[in-house]
Image 1 (tube, one colour):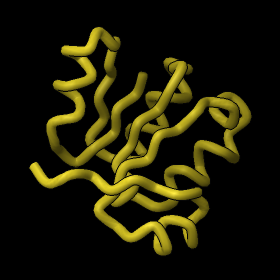
Image 2 (image 1 turned 180 degrees about the vertical axis):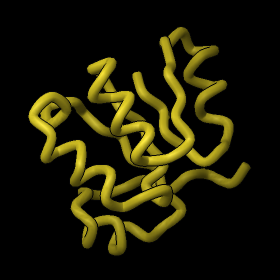
Image 3 (image 1 turned 135 degrees about the horizontal axis):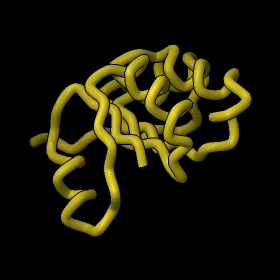
Image 4 (image 1 turned 120 degrees about the horizontal axis):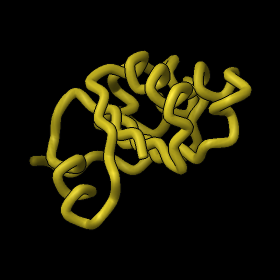
Length: 92
């Protein structure tokens, strides 16, 4: 899985839960790694770059990869940029 975030504890949680995690610290870096590695799942911090989801969906090699988007933004803002309902990131 690709985990793209500006920081936070989810990467450690996913590793401890047995997932193979490739981290990226920006949305574009995560999209680039996804195009190279073709993961089964992408988890990203939607606040990094709202265009990342659209970019992943436009790219034929990544368009079918499921994305879990986490955010501190409101769901209304996230939906305007192309995502469906988005769960908030819990406070650290």
